[in-house]
Image 1: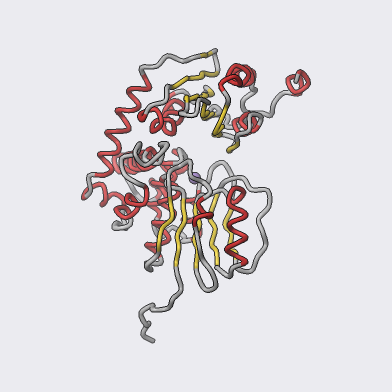
Image 2: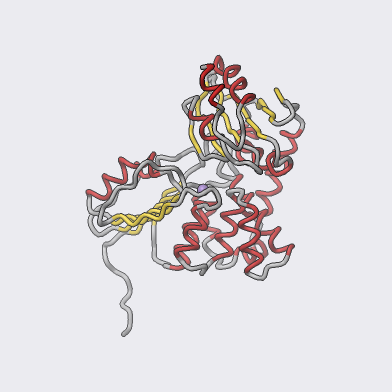
Length: 338
Ligand SMILES: [Mn+2]
């Protein structure tokens, strides 16, 4: 039977984090189901993106790599309005609503990311894109293993890694003025290619982003740690366009270079506070989320953050950071001291 062209009023709305994991999840889905869809995305820090979505009866909404916890109200509004929602994510969530119109693919294991959940759902159809997303989320080992399974050699694996890290880098900034290309515009380039290696061959964007990322990392490398001991280091960054961009990949770069060490990166903000990013040691990725939650932040066990730390809390934060037992829960002895 011949398929009729799709002329219904049904709208397709894709919503994702503007980092590599988010964008590469949507890319996989839209290569699989190439329908005209509108995209709602933003910078890394813009999490409550479902608030911006209007959809109702008969509409299809795809959500990728956005905390369900942080978008729950908007999700319930869309479901009640009659929209069908497919939700793929790997961020912690207290409970997933049961609703006939919600299809949730949530897995918070530390070795998965949203691109990998999409890859699982699509049974590896666009695995090279899943690999790019996973490299972007710093799941280097998993990504490298999957790429090897695709028969890719060391050079191609390195290319996919660089692309993932470059896309991820591009999502960090306070506003679109800080970043090289708005994530929505970057998506429009990515989706032209079924194979990310072909994108690298035909487009300059991957190489441009990587060159800028290296420039910003060089600026950061010139800084001395604000505090360090044998197992952890804390850096204090000024508020500048380069530091607003580099804050995401600097943690990964430091963690990859010294997998035994925990890192805290504190950056001054325009409003006079600090934004904090914490990495547990790569080889014992536990404790970061717990530490950040004590200061009003959140995140996963291996990587977490605090959106706003008052300057007067900095010393207290550094003190708790310095006594954190990485790889296990906080020691009872320390809990009693508080
Ligand atoms: Mn992610």
